[in-house]
Amino acid sequence: MTTLTKSDNPHSKIEQTSGSRTSAKKILIAVDDSEQSIRAVQYVGSLLRETHDVSVTLFHALSPMPRELMEHGGSEDPEVEDHLGEQLRKEQEEWVRAEGAIEYPILVKALERLGQTGFPIDRVTLKFGHERDIADTIVDEVRAGGYGTIVVTRHRSSGSKWLFNSGITDRLVRDLSGVALWILG
Image (tube, rainbow, N blue to C red; front, side, top):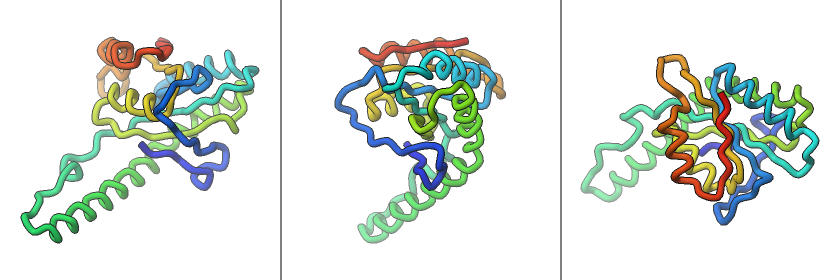
């Protein structure tokens, strides 16, 4: 997962995460470029703007990483293997930076809409995840961040796939016991 720092956006903060336990006061909102996501952000902001001990993470899954960046060809020579591994990690980091720059406006728009509700943006963190599988990406972030509530929307995204379809929400319910799941339409 990629966490944006204050230098990336002065209106957000970086948050240390611990997978040891969940907190109902930590909310993860999965966002994309749809109007349903913006409405979900506005709903949460309006509902919780006066709740002073709640923090929100706006979370966006990047497109899948290209196959050629998933693994290198390998080598029997340990030095060459190390070099190939390091080169692959650099290429992956560069891809994440480039994709993040392209997708960053989605998080900024969500942050602006959340701020317009009166929810304090100093309690908002912006994060990217890698979409190898949307449900797995969200589950990984929830476990790592100790979130007590997840907010997702159910809608069709461009490309005609259900972004948060019943299969994804079923998996979130199954894989995340002890976490509240808000499914907004």
